Image 1 (cartoon, rainbow, N blue to C red):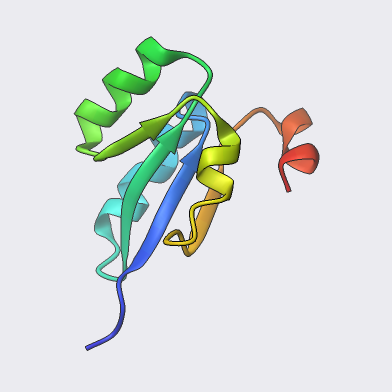
Image 2 (tube, helix red, strand yellow; image 1 turned 120 degrees about the vertical axis):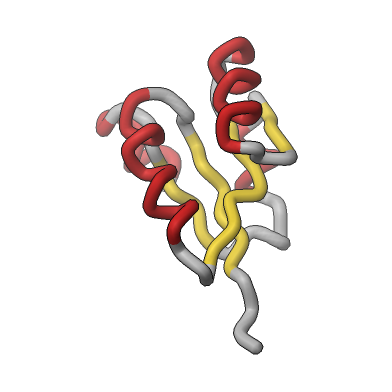
Length: 83
C-alpha cells in the first residue's frame, strides 16, 4: 500500500477554498495542518474541512517533519518569502 502524503496549507482564505476539494478527492493525500494569521478564519476552515491541527505560526508548519507537501495559498506577494 502506498503512503498517504500529508499536506500542510499556508493561508486558508480565498484560493485555499479552491484547492481543498482537490486535496479531499485525492486518495493519496490528507490535509493535516492549516496555518493562517487570522485565528477566526483558521478555526472556521479547520472545522469545515475537518483538519485536525492548526497554527498561526508559519514556522511551526514549516518545521513539521511529518508534512510531505506544503500548499502556499497566501496572496502572491508572500509566495517567495515563504518558499
